[in-house]
Image (cartoon, rainbow, N blue to C red; front, side, top):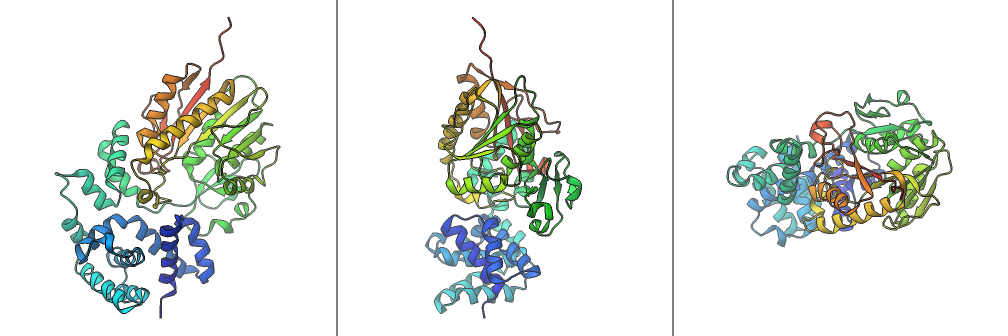
Length: 447
């Protein structure tokens, strides 16, 4: 008999590997299909999240235990080996149970025998003993050592170390990597005018006056969330919307634009804030299915808000221009590895060049469409300097009609790599690593 919880975990891991799915989105669907709740659902969640987060560490251990290179192991079998290794090295599962249930999942004699042999070798040591054997000495290769111990690709460790150094904290890299592997609490946001923070369960967030952090439970059972008056949103993302909405602006303030709006969490908060001032939000998203998610998020928000399927590098022209623009740019997502650990294994250093070019184009388009005197907030869920410092510095050099406006959220140790910008950190602030930079389009001087 195959254990239903472990079978469900394998189904999620397969979707993540074969369809580039995100575990946090696939998991609820699979749990419902298998009818798993309570402790069984919790077991599946831990099996999936732990296996994905610790993949780098487990691969180093498995390479030492396998009689063949891991690249020659069938991907589905490698999923099983990682799943079994997680139970052996990080969970309170008896070794015989971890091995036998994984062999059951493997099925056929040849595959089952290979899985059994490898996992028995894994079970001969605990995690700390394996790390002493497979991790390179820190003194000789600090990035490679941290990559194995904290399960991040080497290039990601190097980029995060550089970003921390720019923030005066190069010695904090281990704390950051550890924070990436710690499951985050679910954070809710009360959408202004629709819900009060006091009606949401949980502890008030320290930086956003609209947020609460849950200790546990299904956020979908919270009435305000089910009704669309509140939503699930990291505190860092809440602060992005608040920073744009609360920035001082001279002149009219009736039209706001959110480019790259999908899936719509920031859009919903911006639209709620705009509605309270008699303003409206135009949200654009290039992908149709993500534009539908934005519409769903805005359904409960009153006001004349519009969602368009459009390319953010060619935003819609508005008569007289837009007053406030949010550019929540596509990025590596390396600031949200707590929530989406898959991103660390999907991205490559080579992605940075194309992404930074796209980010610069999106920011340039936003500055073109905003009215003179209007504001543009550039944000990424990544602290990598190519996506933060480089984009901002190149924009400042290229645009003589744009001024970087100093941004201060009143949060300690949040100074960004460019003076006046903000960089949040999981290990310092308990948020995703959001980067924020605020620009004002200059009013042309009179002749």
